[in-house]
Image (cartoon, rainbow over all chains, first blue to last red; front, side, top):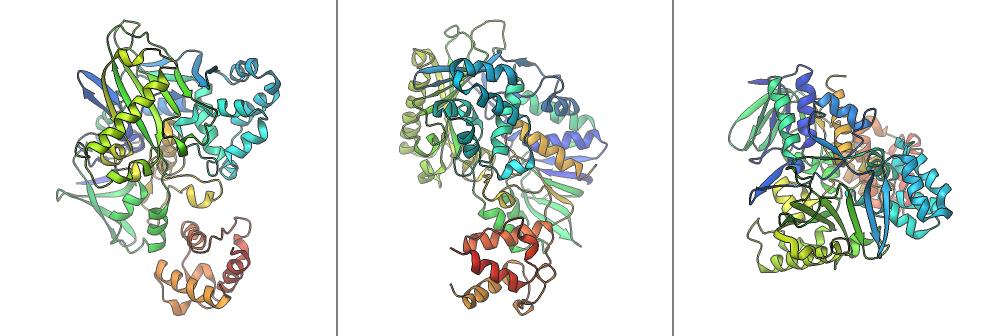
Length: 464
Length: 80
C-alpha cells in the first residue's frame, strides 16, 4: 500500500500533521510504536479514573488568538474547553501569595498592586511578550528579566508559572520563555475530560479523511533510494511506502533508523545524538476522596523561597511544586483528581537507567515515596490537610517518560534550547533527505502551542 | 594547540564526519563545495567546531569563512 505521507510517532505533533494533511486530501498513515496513541497527550485509567500524562492547561484559545486559529483548522475547538478563572495562576513564594490575571493589561496591573514600584517594568514586560521575534532565540531570558525587573522577588514571581518549560539561567532563550508565558496570559483553558479526547478527535479527523493510525508498529529502519526515503520497515516485518515521511519522535531516535541512508552523513547524526536534553519532571497524581475538596479553576505554584530559576538544580528536597486540579466531569463542585509536578533532573534517577517499569527495586520506590511526601508537604501550604484527602497516589519520573514515550533521559520538553548556540539548538524541520521532515517538541518550541506551530511549519513544506 | 595540530585534527575530523577523502581538504580549497555543504549541513560544521574546540562561529562571521585556511585561522584566533 502506498501513502502520500507516513508519520512516525503519534504524539500531538504527529497527529496534528496527520489531521492537517489528511484534511488537505493526502493519504496519511501514522505509525505508533506503543499500544496507545497520543504520546504526552495520552491518558491512562486507574481505579475508575483517567489520568493525564502531559496535558494540564492550554493558552491562547480565545477567538483571534494563535492557538484558537490553529485548533479551528484542526477541528479541536469542538472539544469541551473551559476557560479558567480570571486569576488563572496563583503563585506562593515563601508564604506570600500573588496572582496572574488573564489579559496583558490586567496581568501587569494585578502584579503592580503588589509591586507598585515596578509598574513601568511590568508594562514593558507585557509589551515585550507581545513582540517576540526569531531574534529572541539569541537573547537570554534570565538576563532580560534581570535587566527589566530590579525587584528580585518580582523576577521570581513572573517566572514562577514557567515550570512548563525548562527554567535554566544560562541557556533558556527569551523566545521560549515568552512563548511559554504569553499565550496563557492571553487566555487560559482546561479540557473538561482527559487528553484522550484531543487524541481521539485528531485520529477521527485522520480516519474520516481516509487515513490510518496503527499502534504496535515500531519503525526500525528507513530505506533511501536515489536520495529520497522510499519506505519504512517495522519490527513486525511490515514495510510501508510513501512519498513523504515525517518524524514526530526524538531526532536522536530517528537517527538510529537512518543508519543505512547514504545521504545522512555522520556529522548530522552526531549533532542530533550529542544534543542535550531538557530536565524531566516528577509527577504525583492524586485521587481525592469524593466531596473532600472544592474544585478550583486555576493552577497554584508553591515555592519555599524565591529560587525559581535555580530550583531544578537543587530540587532535593523538593523546593517548588505546581498544583493542577482536574475539571470535574459530573455536576458537583468538588474535584476527584490533582496533579503535583516538580522538575527532576535525569541524574536523580540515572542509577535505575537499566531497569524497566514495575521492576526498579526498593531504592527507587523509596525515592518516589520521599519525593511524594515532599511534594504533598509543599502543596499543603495551599491545601491544608491534603494528605488526609488522598484516596490513591501514582507517581512518574523521567524514567517513566523515557520508557512509555521514548524520550531519551526522560526529558519533559525534548532537546534543550540554548540562547548561546541558537543555530545548533533550534532545528530546521528539514533533514538531509528532501522528503523526510521533523516535527514535535524538540525542533523549535515545546508545549501545546509550540508543538502545534511546529506542525503547521512542517506541513507547509508538503502543502504550502 | 599549534596551527599544525589544529589542521591535522580538524582535517581528519571533517573527512570522517562529512564522509569525504581527506586529500581533498587543502588550505585553499573552497569549504562549501569540498564538504558539499548546504544550509543544513553548515550547522553540522558549526557544531563540530564548537564541540571540538569550544569555538562558536557567529552568524555574522560565517560569510568570512570560505576556505579551509580561513577556518583554521578562525579556530586559532578564537580557541580558549
